[in-house]
Length: 139
Length: 82
Image 1 (cartoon, each protein chain N blue to C red):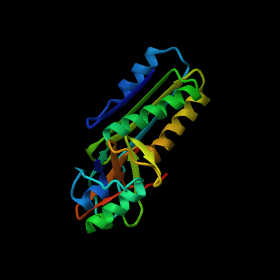
Image 2: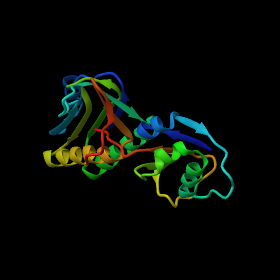
Image 3: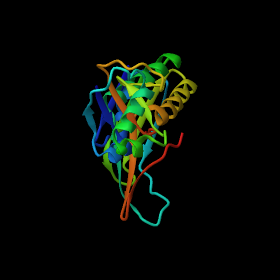
Image 4: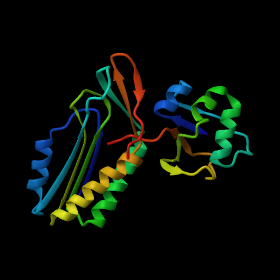
């Protein structure tokens, strides 16, 4: 089962993990959580603004999950990605992959986050106390 | 033709979308970009450094891609998701 969610509101990591773990008897589950980090600058981060292209973002996340699901024979794959204005430490993205064995779950999870970082249409803008700038791509 | 813009490209152009009439000789994405740049200097500022991607109906396409007139064409900078 593949589940893709793109929304501005936060999510409860413990709830998502428990829900998936209890819904299947597969033995291995891997999660990746990406959060807003502080920036190395004199001016502290006020917020991180995430913009996205809704139709294409859904399509890319769905296709990426589908590819990983089939390649690594997953039993569950969840991707949650937020948009809007976020603060330091706020969760941005959660990827949960579940399979019978750990290697497949790890590989699938890494593939998904690496792929979406350079292909999913989301853009980050850092707003500091003094100025604002768009974050450049870091594969 | 519907054009939509995101992030830095949207900010430089000062608009998130527009419907434009393009001459029939505009066949490829490259033709379209050249047309936009010649049409208005703000496109030059947004697109001249070539640091952007183009998606046609939510699929990334190359500069030699042949445009379909009813498509939604999105122009945006390199993505920074995750």
